[in-house]
Length: 412
Image 1 (cartoon, helix red, strand yellow):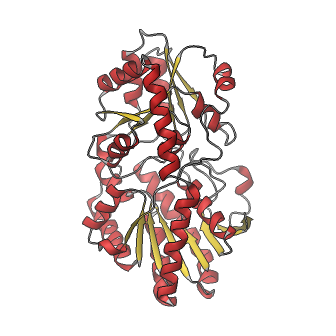
Image 2 (cartoon, helix red, strand yellow):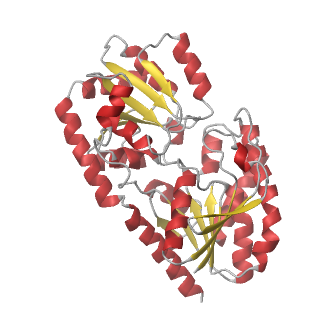
Image 3 (cartoon, helix red, strand yellow):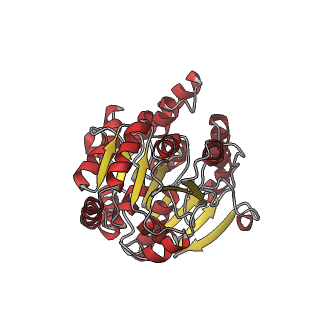
């Protein structure tokens, strides 16, 4: 198949959406398909484009046999609602330079990845023009999150974007997404169930394994018998990570419990400042980890945290959860039982639920799990088992290939 993928994030980003789109493209190419990707230069999660990608701004490169076309974008110094809008518009505008070339080529299917919402517009037109399947993949219900978290507060803009979202859902031969709850939301927006497909983000079962590098990394972190509580991932507004600092304040009397927040994001500087102001000496911060050191950090933790704000329930599915399960570690999720994150926590038998944005409940859950080593071991075994049974990369990517092949065959 000749496949075109359009989305803002792609390899070499190795966290978030860029990682999954990158691995999808590379896997399809390894299966013999011809894959072209139109994306921005790598910038996430630091929100900064590396010097090597700044000139030339428009470039063609090859990654794992995939043709990758880059278009520049604006990265705001402070990630605000207005900054995000300009960020997305800049990529939408700059990527137009590639479309005459892409429009002249023949494709079997075109896949657009949301976010960005606008990434689906020209692919939808291309699909209609060439009479090929247009697939809209929803990694994040971006518009719902912007509305419910008050990231965007302009009624006219929200109304316009809602109309664009409905249009793209109606034009797509398939709307794919990563969780059952997100699929339900998409169905509520008018998309017929037969066109909605759930294809979860996979876990890296080969690179991330239980106990791999655990002892060495704990020595490096200065840990002996202490209980390491780890949050590793994006530090953005959807997570509400202040609750971790509040919980750490409540457990500060127990010197065995240590917290590490590792990653980058719009909220990082604010969190570091708050921890310093509160003199939380049981809390420390690490930068985004290199890909070869990330599995060791996951294994070094005794308890992982998967934190979401109440308003973000079922709008996103934290991709970090798959890696936590692959590492065979127990976790605490701040989610209600009826949300997708809550259901996976209970189904996996590897996690504990705490109400969202409730520091007291989170502190109690941390303390209880910190005192029960046998329970942590049992939950860790269940975590790895769940990842192996449901989140294998080849299994899920095989489902992707089958879906694309079926749509292309039907279109022909």
